[in-house]
Amino acid sequence: MTALAFDTHQAVKNLQQAGADEALAEAVVTTIGTALGESVATKMDIQDVIAEIKIIKAEIKVIKGEIKSSELRINAEIKIINAEIKGIKGEIKSSELRMKGEIKSSELRINAEIKIINAEIKGIKGEIKSSELRMKDEIKSSELRMTIRLGAMMVAVGGLIIAIMKLF
Image (cartoon, rainbow, N blue to C red):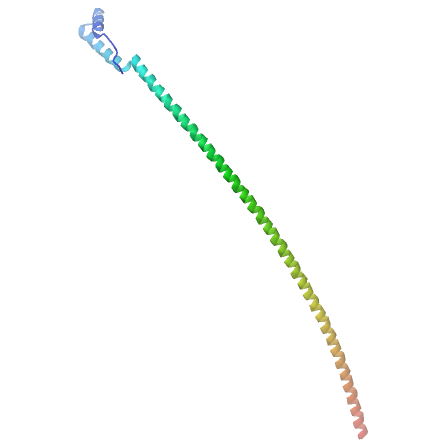
């Protein structure tokens, strides 16, 4: 701070005229002079503060511009990231649809193969049933032939017995 112009000699005279002795007057003037010198701002001090405020305001304006520039850059980056996210979501949706199609295709192919296998099983069951019926027929036929042969043998044995009895 700049020193304040203070006429200490005149102040001491004024105090002495008011009834103060010289030592008291000088002590009061010194104390007041010291206090004024430390705490009172001059026009020059105020102008210095105003100049500093103007500098600070200019710096704040620059910082605000930098903040605005950063904000614009960040918003642009956010838009780019959002576009990338949208693209990734599209790729995921496309992959999902493709996989669903592949799954459906696999299901259709498997179902067709199951139908073919079921038809083959049905055919095999038919063949088994047919073979079973043929075998039953063959068994009945064999039984019948055996019965006929057995009957023929019995007739032959009976004839032999009759022939042997005639001999005796």
